[in-house]
Amino acid sequence: MNIILMLLPAIAWGILPLAVAKINGKPINQIFGTALGTLIVSIGVFIVLKPSISVVSFIMAALAGGFWIIGQLGQYNAYKEIGVSQTMPISTGLQLIGTSLIGVLLFGEWASVNAKIFGAIGIILLIIGVALTGKKDQKSSNSGNTKTMIMLILTTIGFLVYNSIPKAMTSSGLAIFLPESVGMVIAVLLYIIFTRQPRVLREKASWQSLLAGFIFSVASITYILSVHDNGVNSAFVVSQLSVVLSTIGGMVFLHEKKSHHELLLTIIGLVLIVGGAIITTMF
Image (cartoon, rainbow, N blue to C red; front, side, top):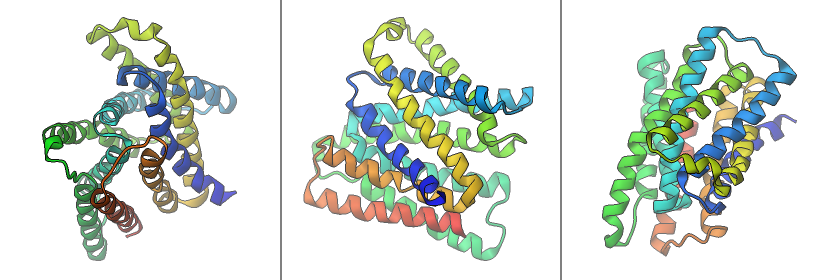
């Protein structure tokens, strides 16, 4: 059962980008459906488990969920611009780099000298891996690729805040799942209001995207359970295999084209990203 719990988050998070990309809709449709689908599942979990959480923790978790929307919206836009097979390794690598640095600077992680050395090596591997997976042969695509990279870097800040807030909270695990999803839905609705896109609420693609929320919920719930049963390090490292699944899936199932040279760089980049994740987590 422990092995299944470790693998399920990787499988679900790996499938998520493929499911989203298959839905004929704009990123705003996809993010609305994802947030609402997550809220539906979280309400069910809350009714069954009835976890306790303070008002302050509820607000902080909701704030984390709002920042998650920023990061995920950046990913969804990137799927449209450069494809899943290029977006996921870049986005995952950026998150790993940022989360590691925040852990060191704000939470005092990597306290020993050895941890700092191996951590620095891990970050270097992640940076090289991101650079390799983002490399394109076509010179004509450089401008659009650069703009998308800048967008991913900026929106990754949302993921970093989302990952960091729970570390400063007394409540954790499934207790913060509902408030996070509440924050997600509020953030999406605010985005829809400010961008004046109320039609999104009526569009078919938005409701089809509920599936993405259900998949995300499966990943999140099983990851929390895996952390409880297998420990943070093991659960986190195995979950990062999702980037391999989504990248390969983008090429196989979404028919995203790569030249032989790009494919080789992507494979090397993925190996470096997974290796960097292992090093920064285990040491």
